[in-house]
Length: 368
Image (cartoon, rainbow, N blue to C red; front, side, top):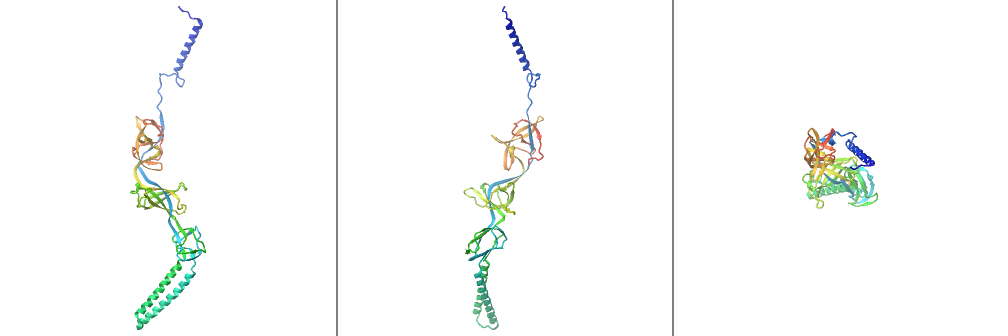
């Protein structure tokens, strides 16, 4: 028989005590209590989500383009008579009504010619009247002489009218109501017929010219509503109508021109400004429209999550969807959703198919 020394027996006793303590500690639960079973199952994860109920509504589809503002009427003023400019009645940049005088060309020579023509026309009328009375009363003279006198009277009257018309054209008048936007001559300068004197621009109404892709040629008609915005006026949106649709396509950029008429009563919009144009393409009724950020892209296309009841518990279900036209942050769902579906709009990136969820908020407005 082998005998152990006392020191060896003490060391083995200490090892036994430590082993017993380790077994006791392993039997403790995470909360410091002893587990009743060998394993404790974890509670199922529940994700808080917000939902909206899908409801059929209306949606307006727009064609987007970039356009440039032009004045609805932009007319160049030109001289019609030769002479020196004596006066301007309107300052540059001022508003002028249609028909009001803008400038005056010296008319001294024409005035004298008009007076001479008036006198000659009066004498010719008197000669014709007297010769006609003599002819009718006593048949003195010849009928040919009477006709010649009549022709001379009519020619004198025509010359008078022509000179009076030329005298009237020495006053340059506004062809339309607008702003005297450009002045190219000064008082004292000599002008000839056709010389450019200035420009009148009508800015109370404007037109926006834009190019629309040719694929929309069969859908866009005159009278369509359009929305126009400008980067320099954030938050301001003008509504106009399509007044012109081009009949040819530009060979270089494959677009056709359209013009949109806008009211500009405060004249804040200026010609040559760049505008963002949205022309109404179609109005869709009875369609499901959802926020774009709830649609998730997948390898197979697009999907959304809806909440369904399964075994009495709300869980998520992935629905593949087909997208239609979009505008702003709204997109039409043409396939995959039906009226009444509870669409996950907050928390959609935190769930998987079959995830348990808790609906924490139901917004008052439904998806339109």
